[in-house]
Image (cartoon, rainbow, N blue to C red; front, side):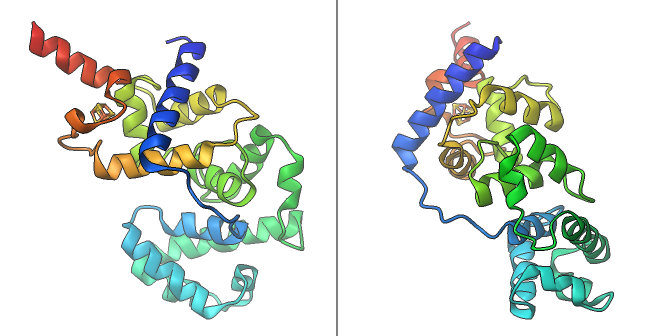
Length: 229
Ligand code: SF4
């Protein structure tokens, strides 16, 4: 599909989902908390990563203070989230690299860059992939980037916004290409896609008949064609 068509389809999906689920109320989040929270969410359930995150929140006022903790302490606090030693290492190394770049940890230098450069810098941090980088830029700085989580990935493929066989990396690249730099509703679209993925377009047995974006969906249209033939 041409980029132009993908752009138009995504814009129509965004508008239909916003009509159904509404706009998202959002206060910019602390970038270190988003960064650490997303590292904690890797390879575990929302419930377990939340538990790990809350333990860290109880232990320090500001996540930059995690660097002062003795080795192993972070891992013991985030045990509930699994892979705690690996995640402690990722958190420490990422915070160290950020401190070297910006001792104040404000990360405001990121908004002086364009989204692509900011993504490149954040993705270079240990254990920080495209999704984590995009979460920081979107939830803390409202930059127009789309974190491709499991729901965004699945709905993107089913609707045909991204090709069926696209890798996660490719999906991130496509969203970066088709989301206009001046677009300010990415956060609404991201959150609404997740809600839609949880409530309607589930991994197994998507509820297509009650889906508001079905006229735009390749998967649904193919089902209809198959049923008619
Ligand atoms: S029509 Fe079905 S497959 Fe397509 S987005 Fe909606 S629920 Fe998902």
